[in-house]
Image (tube, rainbow, N blue to C red; front, side, top):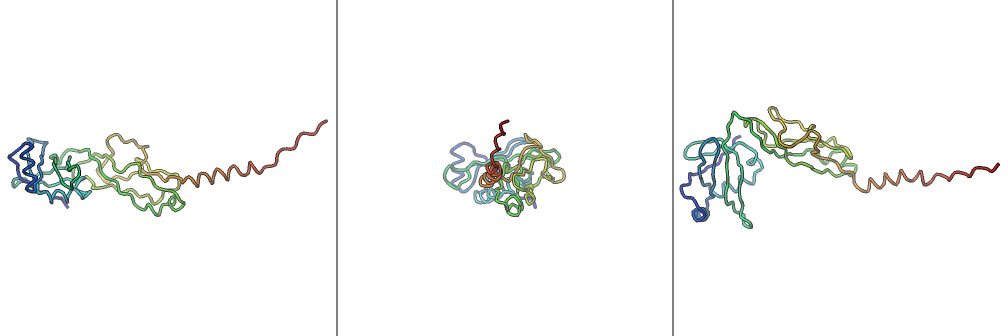
Length: 212
């Protein structure tokens, strides 16, 4: 389902105008790309709650502006330093026929059932998102990674990630980059080391050679 965001064209600009706008419960913003940039404003409560949704950050949105719908993506937003207040928001128009590069969040599944976790290991998420390239219609909201088969010391690499149809890895990622790993707990490492050292310590010293 497409996420919609409602906005109004903003005719006033400048720091003072933006401050007055915020006092009325609106948030200043801009939409750019594929044509002229347009300043706009959005209801604060609407944008505040939508920003709390992970899906809103990685989806093609329908921007309702001046009676016209445009396909856009969220590109940036600014929060107040200590208040729960959105100060500014940027959108970029999307060409539905052109591949886009974007970071998509990762969702990790079956962590607790992984053999490595049951053996006392701890899963470390090396990456929490992947940069991908795809057409807007193929953009996934997130990518699932099943960790249910990971044993102690084992790693899932970028090459192991199952991507949705039409989606490919982009950016600086390499096939050998780690995505998640089951770390071997220190106690297990020490126990193995002690076990390996014990036979050597218990072995009797070799008898001295007899004198002829």
